[in-house]
Image 1 (cartoon, one colour):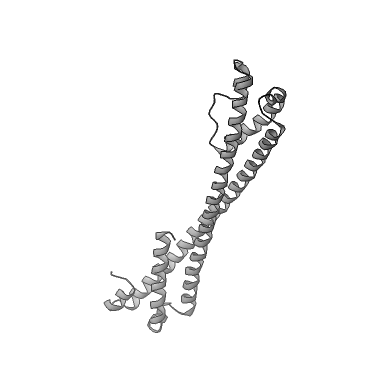
Image 2 (cartoon, one colour):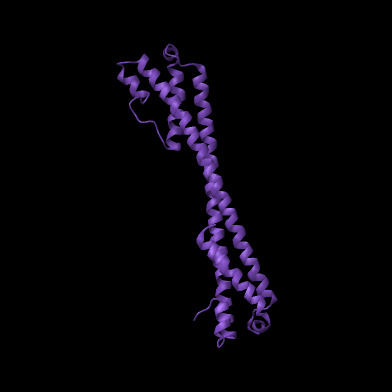
Amino acid sequence: MEPKIAKTIQTAYLLLDNLKKYQPELNNYGANDTFITAFKESIEDLSQKHLLLENVKNRKIAVNRIQKNHLKICTVLLKKIRSATRDVYIGNESILQKFHVNTRIPKDIKLMQKEISYNIDLVTDHMISLTAVGITEQDIYNLIACHNAINEVLATIEKVESVQNDAKKNQSLSLAHLKKFITQTHSKVNQCFINNENVLLEFNIND
């Protein structure tokens, strides 16, 4: 749990326990059953919102692992194609440039998507020559599979990031709501026990 969230929840539960303890005195200051119930629900809501956000973060980590794995597979395949291209088109700079032989293989997933898509048509057009150096129909199928896998990963990433953004907003709203309860509780306690330093200390109110 994030330190900021953990500290806020810990503080809130301490206040809630003391509210229940001193409810007879605080009731006249608005700390009635309705307030205490709403306070408790606010704590639980923040805990739930934070758990949801953590689950989404873990999902994103898992998707990133899948993304890295696809990038590795695509990189190996592109290296194979470029190596074969060098062998069969040695000295033919025009063809070598078309195959991006002297260009770095993308590490970004979206750039890799474009490169794989580009190579599907390129390899297909030069299949007769490339077959002589070990490129087969299976390599084309593998390119298509890579392209489809990347599309799926990108769609998942977009969805997860959208859910994560919503979860962050919801957690922030829930946190702000709980902090209002904490502020209101401090105010009620200060009014009720203005001359009782010991009780104020129990509520961790020092001023």
